[in-house]
Image 1 (cartoon, protein in one colour):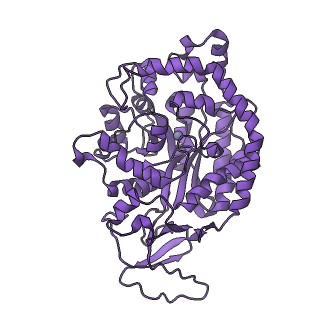
Image 2 (image 1 turned 135 degrees about the vertical axis):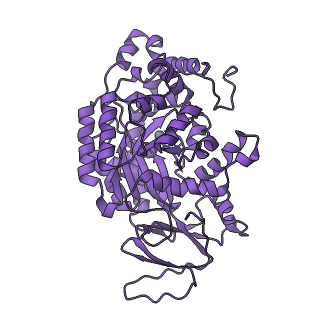
Image 3 (image 1 turned 30 degrees about the horizontal axis):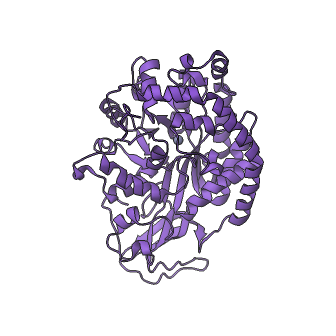
Length: 495
Ligand SMILES: [Zn+2]
């Protein structure tokens, strides 16, 4: 994954104190180590940098497969648990672990978690999430994805569509105000940022520009600037959000709005970026933002197809993510990479514009490393880099016969060839077992927690039914608007 895309038939990699100390590609000679040095025979294996899941919400790790495919705005109705359904710290710990284990076992060494908290963040839940990451050994960067404006302000048409009683409920302020949220960030930064030798880090998140007040938006940007940490922001994920910009932000796109607020920067991880126009993309390129591409989630929620080539040709770094476990029900970066490698082929007739496997690997690893903004180098096998490495068995059907390594990584491998995962020099998965925690007992505990949550989840689904007709109307009204661009294969004229 270096600039030259080097591949070596054999090498001796020395790791010391969490870092790659040296890489000798002259020979796969016998390593003569001192006492206490572990030697790993890599004959027949591929060693590569670990994969990076650059967009994820751990908060719903326990809900995979729980919903039919639905558009984001309707999907989010069903995703919110019933009032008073605050989770216990241990349940949050186990829930976080479910996703982390799935990632480690499939060769993901780092995750950018944009966790949301129902009804509001609390120090003990933040601690539970970070403790899970601390214990399992994955590299994690956590932000608190929490809006601070009422529901009615985030969506177009809703104020006119809702009957008075529901309108009043939708206009109620969220449980926690900006001051409370910033207090939670203070806790996250003080307790966890830089812990585990820098493996655990904080980021900030405003969820989306339309979901926060200008003052809170500015406060988060300042926090991100002070600590030089990533700023996660969902932007123009859906057509409805483009329509919202026209209505609520004086005809501007949400990217233009962020730019006008002075918050478009190289610290911004723009999540999705599907309904961008050419001017938006120019602004993003000029500000050196990163785009987090989540093609499976985008298909699952019918959001549309991100303009991959237009972004890439402007030199905008792209990273890949699974998004949450209800919107990509597997936490598997191999399937994300494969879809990212395929979906854009139907957006251009000229096949020269279609993504190459090498570009997808670049997004997967180099783009992800760029999104983390870690002060420690990540994403290459070179001296001084973090020893975040995985070993893949090349004696598997995915690589037999071995025709082209990069294409087979993107189009053939689904994670089952991963035999070893190492994060910061520590082996966290090998011989089919996560080495850091007891997966079997965690799975059993996860089932118990899910059983306890089931009646609350059912109540939440029933509550959502009350809102559904109005949200459906809002969605269809936005879908029918002419916004001068297409990101769907469907024709909105004929739903
Ligand atoms: Zn997301």
